[in-house]
Image 1: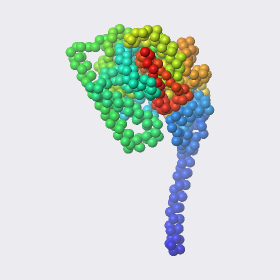
Image 2: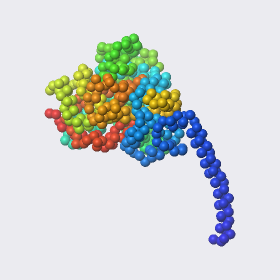
Image 3: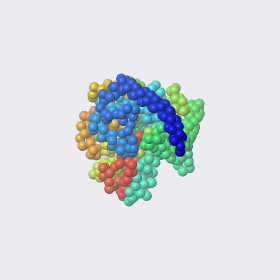
Image 4: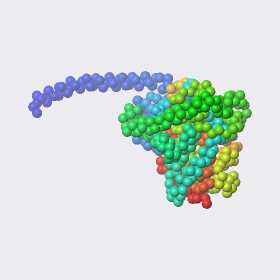
Length: 554
Ligand code: HEM
């Protein structure tokens, strides 16, 4: 290359370099100004008063999440809470996230009618659940909660006991082929849970003749997997990436099956209701009668399936009116009745609520029951106590469990509560606060716009609340112990106005399901709890699988 050409190239590079340098300098100056402006905002200053790891310009603490899998995130979150205490903060860019593990602070958030808005992480559910109870907010949530809570009335739940029994016996049969082997019990718990929900939420059954029910159940399970992967994999969290993946196409296909069935069943049930209504065949007593009675009689405490606390919420108030008659109606029927009795509830909204119940009621109880079985396999002395209690109730009889039997299962109830303490299926709850919040435990103000994460898992493992918190001890739920604890120190079902609407349904179902399994099998495990690899997802699971072995009782 001649010297002239080199000189010419050099001068054209120099003439290009100058604008690039000027541009880069401007970008740097603008970024620095932006950063200093952000740091001067009240939001950032209030956030920085709260202890937390050192944050970097623009990324905040996002670097701490890079390259971590969900097991590590769970462990890391636990470590941070040991370092920074019961109130800690992190920055995702300039967005403030505050972690709370102090019951008095948690009460301020959960017990409030103001801080009811869910955080943006709940958006993955939207294509499936629309504006159903789990994610809706404001007046819509308030009015729907009021309409739906009576569908979980204890007398309605009582009529589901047969469905719980039949499906529990069916899973006992299906598990026979696993006797003597080590297997993952979660698959079975997931299947039976969907079957029960299909019957109790929509009045459908998963039979081989009705392929729709089967396809629906499979689609629900696969949709839950997709939602989990979106939480787990950073790139899938971004809609701009997710929308171009094969998983998105699979989601569309599954939603076609799920919404196809719910829409169709809502339409059919509504037409049948209208026809019966026109012919004067009114269901008696109607749900609206229950709702009307509920308004007037809500003074005396009568929590029948309690969380071990004297405090009550809208579900407890529901139980004070006995409808005194057995009608088995799916939640869908009850919602159609509610809509007919004048409530503002469209078909699409009813569909969204049924889909919400199918989602919320599935993974949570599948994880809860799987954890109970794994723990009983490890703590065989505790399993023997549960079995003795069940044997006292049923003797050698093969009869099915009744609602009254479940009321006698006091020790099993404590085992379930203790399992949900150590392994809460919903390990964290997140809200977006729309007003400043002054905390009770420290002199900090959490500014409006912050995501508040309530660390249920960590609260349940606080040594000052539960002595030996890592030891499985159902006696933590003896009445005298629960009464001396702060109500918000045990929150597997959340608490306050936005608590789990299905918690009594869950407890009743778990008692029937687990007692039926334990009447038929002794659970054995070679593992220790320290072998559990926990995945802190939307739902707490074991990545190493829920492995147990079964020995027939007879
Ligand atoms: C062991 C089982 C269960 C656990 C641990 C559990 C836990 C929870 C928690 C922690 C919440 C609050 C979530 C949040 O604020 O982000 C919740 C809400 C909810 N749960 Fe459950 N749940 C269980 C079973 C069920 C069942 C069986 C159903 C229905 C059949 C159900 C229906 C719902 C609904 C509809 C909501 C939303 C309530 C609202 O926002 O007003 N859950 N659940």
